[in-house]
Structures are given as C-alpha cells and as structure tokens.
Image (cartoon, rainbow, N blue to C red; front, side, top):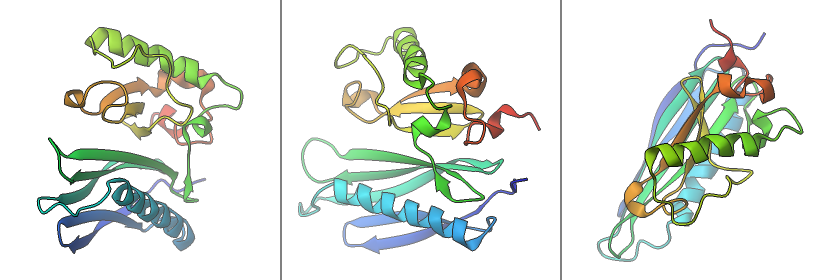
Length: 203
C-alpha cells in the first residue's frame, strides 16, 4: 500500500539583481529517488517560468517567484509555481505553472492521465467551464470553445481545479480564472491509480 505521509516541503531562496526567487524542494518521501524526481521537475518548471518572462534589462525591472502547495496527502503532491516580472510597459505579468505528482514514485501527471483511457474528459470538463463562465458572467475574449488537452490544473480539496492563464480566456483585469470540479462529479471516468483516485476515498 502506498505511503500516505505528507512530504516535507522547504524553500530554497535564490536572490540576484532584480530577482527574488523562492523555490520549493521536498524530502521525506517513500524514497530518495522519488523525491529527486519531484525536485528535478519543480526546478525545471521554475527555470522555464524564469526564461519565459524575457529580459530584465529595463532599469525598473524586477522578478519575484513564489509557490503554493495545493495538496500534500494521500500519496498526492500538487502545487503551483508563480513568477511575477515587470519588464517594462503598463504592468507586470504573472505566470503560473502547476505540477501534480504521485508522492511514492515521483511520477508527474498530465491532465489526460487523470482519467481512464478513452474517456472524453475534455467534453466533461468543458461542461463545467462553460457553466462557470455563464454563472459568473465572465466576458471572454472569444466565445469559449474548449479547454486544451493539456490544460493547466492542480488538485485541491477533493477537487480538480482547471484554470486559464492571464489573457488566455479573459482580459488581464480578471486574473487567473479557476474552475474547481468535485472529484465526485467525475468519478465514473477517473483513473483510480492516478492522483484523483485517492481523493474519492473518505478516510
């Protein structure tokens, strides 16, 4: 049976001119190898966010990186990495990248891997997103058609939370747009070996 103990999460600080980065690293999992896989993936994602922000040559430029742990239980570790940068212009830009792992193995999951093979998870999630847009009266930049097969997501509070980057669905002022979906609403298509499976179990 997979261990259910939470990982130990600590923060590594990286500070250099115009930038202050806080990057998580984990320990205390089922094996050093699993922990290393998780840490390597986190570091690669954090580096990708830094690289995506562009140059800090502007004298006023700054960059701040931070993170939030969303789930750290039941053999599931899900978190969001954030990177804010001002590189000139009217306002800064914040990027978010979320990662979800099976703690005991260090395996990282794509959205499609949360569901049974062949299940139409995209159509199911689209229903919830479309309903949320309507209920919250969100003025989308273009009429909503569909999430991407690899849409951004994290796992929190027995829910799958799919979300959209700034400008991806609506204007900048609306920020990140989150659509939480209870795991019980997706129960029939969930891959029970993946990160959503343990969230179905009440213990």
